[in-house]
Length: 639
Image 1 (spheres, helix red, strand yellow):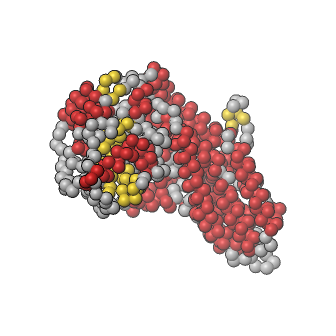
Image 2 (tube, one colour):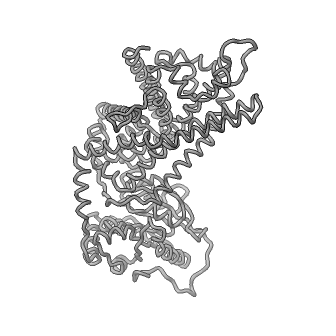
Image 3 (cartoon, one colour):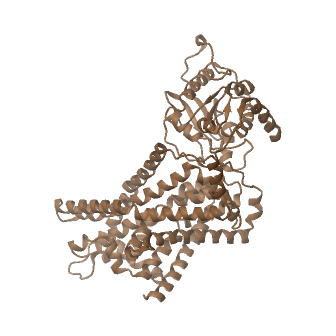
């Protein structure tokens, strides 16, 4: 063992036990707790270098021990909790979570670069009376900063074993796995009942105890490199920092278009070739129409946007892993306070650009109930990845692919404007909530206290794994939800068949045509055609299905084999018009979210009334803004 305090028991007294054992993984945000969980269990849990990643407990079996369950609990700085995610940790440790018993032991992950905060938390955990082992994570970063820690002194002072770890490296937790085996043996041998109690020790007193221990355990002072300090002076500057953030976001949106185009063209060619090949192989009839016009046209029209979605996720993962995102949250705290939010809302809001479902769940890190509700209400205005295919399709159809100033792309600028429009609208709605519901007073009761992690090079292996998880999840969705809805939509646009001798398109006589014509008068004032109305319906299940719906509707509704082989972009370019296209884009900036997000909002708010209110105001706002854009664009460019 590396430390003198151990949990070892005599070998002749160790009992072979197959009884289930539960070990709680506990630590502060940004300490590498979830990365440690991945190493201990082989799982691929979400890992990121910012607070609030884990918003619920997750579990998996310890490697080599099918009867040992590891619980990855939300990060917390104290058992005196302030937010919903921290409350999960407290309830689990105290056996207050329904259906959960008190854990048999604790694996505490301490940040080796910030031991003062970690040791104060460890002093709290010791009062629970549970066996504990401690992983000094980020030990490589601490050493590079000149921080030398004597594990033996820490172990003697606190009475628990310590071991250094580097969770992001493949073999960085080898000693921890050995120590975990000792903890399991100790739990299996010990038959003493656990008596835990809450401590009334003052936080200030605990910090004094931690400082006293550190004065003997730490033999060298931590120092940050000059480039680290200079970079913080720029990224945290109230003016320069905001400019840097906007420049980063602008570059991301430009790259999403410029870099993804060759890959998108290749996928589009592949999808078209598959459709043509199947058309030649399959005999004319219902089966050919189902496979080519329904499945291939529907799923293929969404899969083609995978390169853009992958690039967006890649940039976000790099920003997460480098340590920049917490600084952006700290930087924007004062700015967000002016609209009734705080820096705690930044991570959920930024997550909303990827997917609203985890973004809504991550609002649990916000201690203020009112601020949390406001954040949930404005999250749908931020452009999630599911809306990116819609934006990309319409922009490609109506915006020329021209260079601006020689380095920028007009289509990329348009996409940036859509993102800015959603973000600005979310800020405006939040500001209105603040003034009508006085959210400032409640938010001020929870000032933002956040540790800023050290800058570090993003871990390529971690980013590659996370990127694959996200892209494969999207493809899985395309292969299940979108596939199913494409088939359902094909049935709606195919049956019943048109009467013999009719001159109009066959789709006019189908179920979808009837429904589209039925609701068309409602959306006619904002320029929507009945085909567009049809696409709104499956779009309630998943927004990216809108593109598949349009592809299916226009493919089936066209006349002749040559027209069926046309791509969707030329059809929209020829039939919609600029005012209609802009109106459609504006509608989806504000349109109510997918059913999955609505379900999560209902679960998180525990209020059907609030869920319906959020859905209703978003639909009204989407309709009004689409009407305004349609009228203004029509006046400028002509209908």
